[in-house]
Image (cartoon, rainbow, N blue to C red; front, side, top):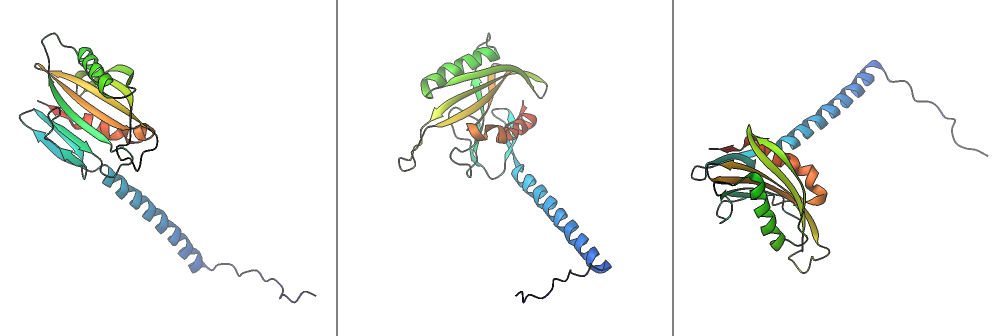
Length: 200
């Protein structure tokens, strides 16, 4: 025998309850949109960099590790929170001869890296402009072993891109490197760098 009380439907919401429900939904949507906007602004926040001697000015990601003391680059910025590979943005200035072209600079970089990076392979080359200046773009991949033996698993596949701009007997090389699975997601940082870099 069933001893449960008969089911009684809930009374309909009155006008005040309906408006409160709508207001709560609208507030939740606004809070979510505001949170996403603030997150995107934080991720895209930059700080100025300038090296008058090298003739380079750019905006680099705020909060990244900045190194300006390298022998082969003007600035190197790395994301300290990125794992397993620290996302890298770099600007280098290389001396070149009078008959140099962007393609010849990329050929030299390819030869140097093929000897230094395991499984180095060029993927493509294409024409590009950087703030109105003609340039050449090259994408490539290589492998990198984990340096910590306690974390060693399989080699990381790193994808990179270089853009070369020639300037008065020098080649400016703008570089982005990232673990391959995250390359496309963080490519916007490189594109932002290309849009803000000034070579003078």
